[in-house]
Image (cartoon, rainbow over all chains, first blue to last red; front, side, top):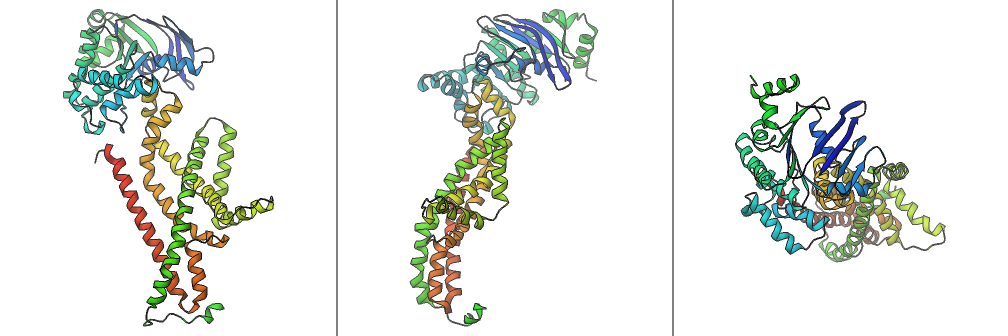
Length: 247
Length: 234
């Protein structure tokens, strides 16, 4: 569905991503792991041009962007409309209710019929377990609830691909489960997803493929069973050790 | 000096209620027909100008930034009274007749626009970057994100400082008396000139009317603030 070729991103002198190649296949869930500063979030953000790569290509089935050339704004919009993004800090619109947050994209961007969108948005909120909270403002919701609204908002634009940037890292531990469950349900429904996460157990259960990034390169990738039980690279082993035995 | 000609309002002098009563409506009418419309019109045009200026100064186009920076600097660096006189005499210099009132609207709009642009710029910058990104990821353009996501939030932040600007503007319009706009203070001056022995009373009366107008409008501010605070955790 999406092929990433030779993706490179620098901030000034600092090269964050060095020639990343990866393939995201339809219906697969990819978990990206890596120490902080490894470039995993930057990679995810490059996938929908929140960061503009310096070089490299993103190729969907029906269209592609080559970042080595000057990129047209219209192409960036097209790229963004293919994917839904869920942020670590939710970034819900604070001046709109849960329902309005979910409706915003379809109504304002896709110019779809408001009544129709409203029905769909309520279904989406129902799916993430928040139908009864639809008229509340974000500040009236818990972190876990806000993040679930964030997921519904991203789904509402009917993307081909869902991107999650550490969706549970800002949550109190007891709220992590409710969000992971929603993501897991999406995986079971066949959504194509890329999830940057620190939740090893979640990656183990849900991901079809795990990518371990360090220092801006993909160090190792493969099915979770292999990465977690028999990592080949020493860097992967050390990272997993630190996460599994923090003391 | 001319003050010597005025009998001082000594303590114990009875307040001339007759004069206060007679002059109340003429002074207030200056407020209703000139001060308030002048304030509101200038504020509306000033806000439009302020938004344009704030956006221009944040744009990537360097000449645009430069032009509007010069505008803000010039307005902030010169007295309002001087600006008022320049605008008043500017149009006749090009053989265009412009009444005092529209001249005043132009001068005050330019003035408010420059000051308020800084408030609006700061309010826009106060909205977290994640809000821009959230707009982008649901497919919005930069402009759409600005108008649907950022400005509504910036607006709430800017209400208290903009209210200050508004209240200052009400009082600053008294300067328009100097270019013959028949506003509240000019009315007071005219009546005062006919009642030199009671001129202090007239000016205190004028001050009192300004105070009431400002007080009423600050109540409106509270209503707006409360309405916009409905989505913020208390």
